[in-house]
Length: 151
Image 1 (tube, rainbow, N blue to C red):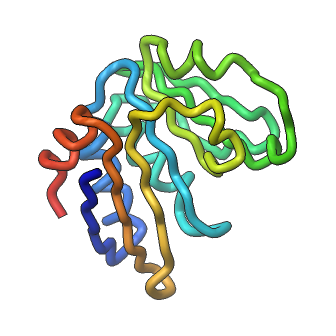
Image 2 (cartoon, rainbow, N blue to C red):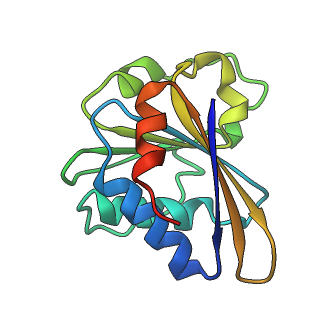
């Protein structure tokens, strides 16, 4: 498993890293976002959406579980927080194997449904506006992605 750590000194820097990633994603890519409440998971997804050419405002899918956005590739933005202790499969495979990019916040709550190959991103506070982003590539495809991300 390849690991890459990047320091983001502002919200804008976090979104720029995410936008750069969004520009190189392919259909079927799966990204998980972990971090405390307010760590910047949705902000990261906004930058990723820009990289996918999505112009609509991206917001947290907390109450809808999945929000879909259209751009160069569709973005399936999921929030699994409300699925803790749930045995419900909402058709994750259709998203993960579909023609878009899946981004899952609070992915630990649906661990059993996640594909083995994916890009895991841990977001940690290092200051009021700064974050440490730790990327873990599970699979060759995601190792290649990490080679293309500047920090």
